[in-house]
Image (cartoon, rainbow, N blue to C red):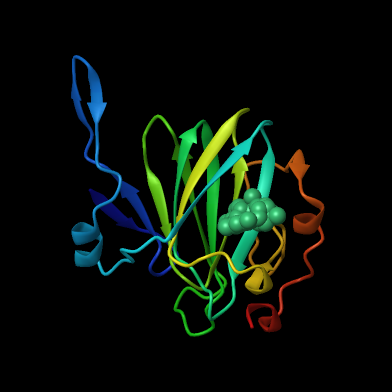
Length: 180
Ligand SMILES: Cc1cn([C@H]2C[C@H](O)[C@@H](COP(=O)(O)OP(=O)(O)O[C@H]3O[C@H](C)C(=O)[C@H](O)[C@H]3O)O2)c(=O)[nH]c1=O
């Protein structure tokens, strides 16, 4: 497994070692010993799937406030998405910075997003699916959001969303209150 640091402290691109032969391929997507050696979360009590019909679907930017803050290990299982993490940790060297990864089901790459970061994505083609491993259970009352086009982050999305949920589109401008 290869871990590549990004512009957000503690967020890594995770690329598996792909073993191919005449039948196809085999690769390890997660290993607690390898993740522990990298200082990354090794317990993911909940896993989620997101399916998205149309190119240009934007979901996010979401996170859970403490004490439910969660690490997300996200990968595309169908299609390609522009996947973004935004650092909302005031004490982080990359506070308010963002990192983007093109998650591609054909390349089997993943994005490790630490606690204290918001996550969102824009689908780059029709029929994209994502698989999430979450290091903490879903707690609705701790669910928070920041807006995809908030000037506080100035994320360079490849194009404007064609489909976005009402809640995501209506997130207020970022203030430090939102992370509490
Ligand atoms: C995360 C989650 C949600 N839900 C319920 C809550 C809603 O009734 C419904 C859809 O949830 P949400 O609107 O948060 O789904 P997305 O807008 O796709 O957000 C997801 O994708 C963005 C990019 C993320 O990073 C979030 O982790 C994840 O919430 O599922 C659950 O029942 N369990 C869960 O673990």
